[in-house]
Image 1: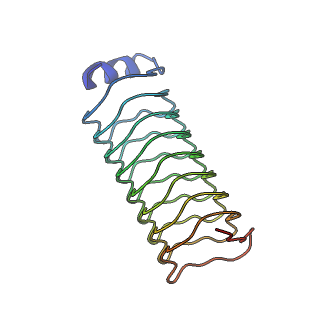
Image 2: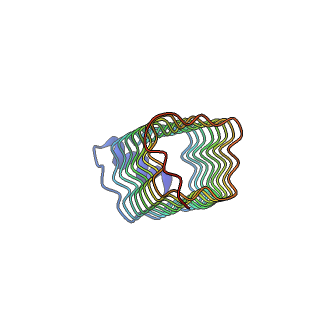
Image 3: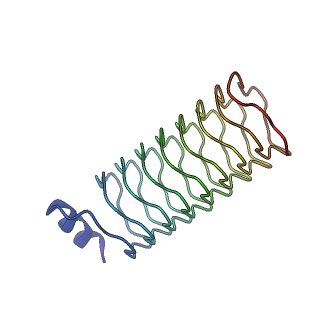
Length: 181
């Protein structure tokens, strides 16, 4: 499926694009809110400022994808693979990212408030100045991640691995702060 076909089918009311191959697609600023992209291949795709509000991206591969400033509010990214993706300034409030592979992802200044990040791999991720308030990070792997000046108020960090993480200026108040590694 090419970008033009996706846009036309979405405009015609179709929402299910499961397993679509959109590798390296240029989808900057596109509105795909509510789209079903389960198991889609979006490696290297340009999704800057895209609206993926409430989209189903579960199981999708988004390696090296650019999702800077994208709206992923309440999107389902469970089991998604986003290694080396760019999500700088992305809006992921209430998103489901449980067991997602976010290794070495750039989430600088991202809004992950109330996000479900249980058992997610955030090792070596850049979360500088990101909002993780109220996020569920139970058993998440955050080793060697950059959490400098991140907001973790009322976040669940039970069993999270924070070994070698940069916590300089990080705000951790309330919530379950059992940081066993």
